[in-house]
Image 1: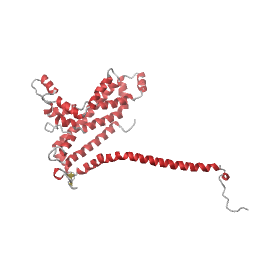
Image 2: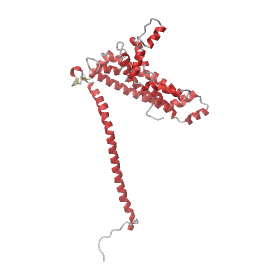
Image 3: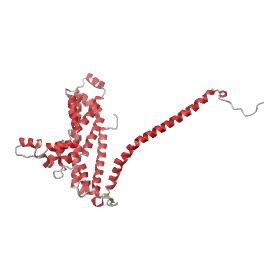
Image 4: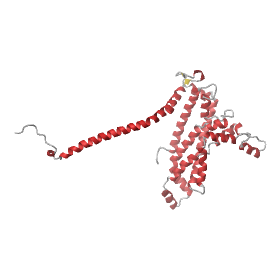
Length: 332
């Protein structure tokens, strides 16, 4: 007679005995999968780490440092250690920029004008060029390539080219004005208003890369949409206004941000063509920051950083306004 506790096996419960094996196999497979995921995440972190470190060192830390030193006294006299102005006077640098520093005020106004001009002139001009080229007229590829050439050349080279164009002694503009108005001796770089527009025209019409983005977006639109519109009797202008432009709105917002950002950060053209002159009339914010923090005998790092913070805030407001206008982060 056998004694002891009897435990029914899987078969006694109505389940085949072989069912116990897959559980162990699945458990082992799950463990392997977890190890593989952990290993994969480790590889991802290793490859992301250099980029994260570069972002922190090159961008994040300088941005935080610029913000905090804008509340300090930091110039050529205390080059090593910035001195905090105190809570009662911490905004002195900002107040002086807007009330005392005429060069900053002029640079701020000029920069806002250049941002506005890129949105009013460059973006519509680029959009019109893209719409015309999208029709593929005769020679459209050559025109497209020629339109892109200025974007391949460095802005420093462009600045030097326009410096020679505007030169009062050998510039083509001066020669042309003297032939039309003999004895006028018009000099673009010696007149405040002419100098501003001289800098403006050195970059405002060079939107080849922006045009390529728009062309790519236009060519990605389903041709069936255009065919259906033509069958319904829509003209080319109606198709552009009611189909192409609405579908391009997010991309138009993107190129508007890119164009306005160029106007906001304008430096090379100002530095090479006018040097901020005449009488500091063509200062931009970027050029003002350079001259204040690095380009003078009495360096004022704190005031330059303060202008940098204001430029950063302008950029945030500009991008936010354009995104809201074109709703680039939403799909219709």
